[in-house]
Length: 451
Ligand SMILES: [Zn+2]
Image (tube, rainbow, N blue to C red; front, side, top):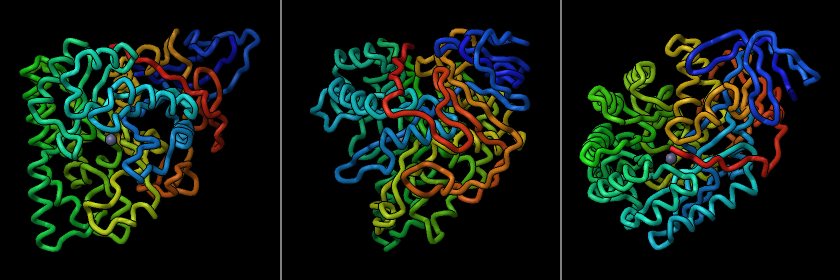
């Protein structure tokens, strides 16, 4: 053995048990009571939880839109991940244009990540208009270990519903999962034009410009297309109770429809946009109401939403405040580092989720959906020794000064937490401990997904 964690409470998607965890050659060798140290390094974790390393299944590090580049690159993004107990992130390979082959964009992204990432990573492949008909390229992407596609129903890169339907059919044949950003382009465009005509362009109008109906309609449309194609489908960043209800209804009919939400949709409301720092909270889809927060928690606990990820897409206040209207302010917020502590304090401690449910939505479910299980997402013999040592008594008031994002701010400033990651192991190596990052750029590995 190389390492034995002694005296902790092991939490998996199935159970909480008092057990030691033994690590050898970067893998979990044994989980059980009173494991012999056999010359290994021993760490006393009495009174601590041991969680499988968290998977943030939706991040954007080093994302460039023209001259606008996110504050966090692959290095700072994966460094802050390590500091938050996140040992695997899933980012995106996005072609520069519909003319760029999918595999070219994928290799480019893999190269960037390989040089800089400090935690393990996978990718989703963004599919632009026209790519959906190139079955050879789609198959090559899946064969390379990227079994998920991402499409949009809005923005310039949007696919028509017909095109999404064709992609869903090919994905079914390839065993891939189509993930969709669902906001109805027509509704958003009409609402935006009305607001601009009325001179209402301040960030305070951001949520009105992208109403709940836009999300719910798009989710319903996409679920109907998946049904027609006989395909599974995954809705990213569900922000509304109505959207979650549409997913729950499809699942109630036994359909393979999955949904993801984010901490900001669980914990913040659109009132933030009216404040002096409204731009800092701007993301798409927008924050909603306290009622939506509660509905999303309820659907998460009921299992109708399967994943909490962050959509980490960070810009500095300077970049955000360069926007002059809701529609030209850079959209996105930092989030990976605070994912686990927020879900623990406001999910588990407040009684909305059990410990196994939290592990399910943060690690086991994303590992299963994106083909990383059982290598990732579990604390079981044979799995990678990605382990979070979590102190449930540590009290922390969240503040940007203690976080590691190059954005330099957090939308959860001042949130009182009880419980925080104390140490993070990546394949058996200590990469974070007590506020200090101990990992190295380039140590993260690409983990091919196989569904
Ligand atoms: Zn995103």
